[in-house]
Image (cartoon, rainbow, N blue to C red; front, side, top):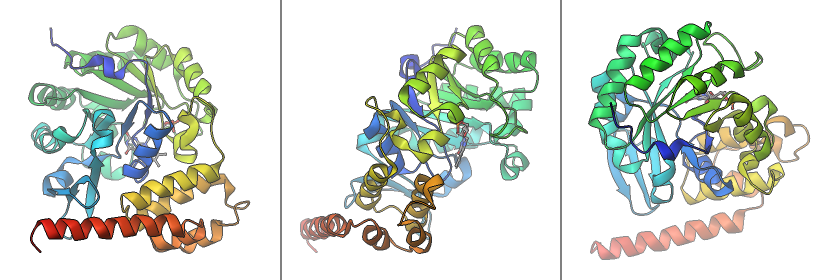
Length: 340
Ligand code: FNR
């Protein structure tokens, strides 16, 4: 019998789901600030992490994984280390292990994406392509479980037939993973299609590892909606994507906040951690989401090009200025200590 690592980490939890472009450092810290127990990073492909250099960024207090042209692929900091799950895109056990070993010191767990229906994933044998490749699933997960010091999990979509889904999840459980996240839609179903909560329930009943329910955002506006989704699926935990993308304060015990509060808090983290302006703009537009016509700042956000632009649009010049001043001072001290 394989001993699963730290299963308790995945029980009774509310979780920020992995989301490409959304699940970068500022949004993850914001979700934790509002009460999420765990946060997943956006999916990052194993080959990309393998191309990265790792560096401690003393100026920002982060650990950065970046490409030779300076592009930051993954930025993290100590505040999230015990709550952060790194999601890997992979089709190959060897590359998956090599990539995961490179980042495992910075995270609380590693997750394998087995649900992405996008063409680039499927063509590369990654994401939802794995749902019908049980031998490779077994190879990848078994290798990760035996080689890593942190818990390993995976996130799937369901198969059209429940019996095939149950066969797949039993195989996944047999590899020794610590939990399984299930998005209750098939790879061809879209967010407008109903989530197959009954499949998640049947999976939760069939497995002994924690099952994390996903796909319920349409009916989630508050923490108690998250709990209702958990109860109706019989799952151990819930993972929220779109509801958090649009209003990250959905995790708050006291109830969600108006979008303006969420925006200001998001931007504070984006400024503090010098988040890339294109990524910041993407997240800002997701927070504005259905407020594009009512928010007076929306048009200017569409044309903003820098963090300074966002500071001006949201009247945060003083806050951003202070952050930049503190950073300059820190840089001076670092240079002084280095004898520069
Ligand atoms: C996603 N999703 C996703 N899933 C995943 O495993 N890895 C990823 O990187 C992404 N990226 C991503 C980006 C964006 C913008 C969205 C909206 C979604 C899928 C997501 O994690 C989740 O499974 C679905 O959105 C269903 O959950 P909700 O939205 O109903 O809570």
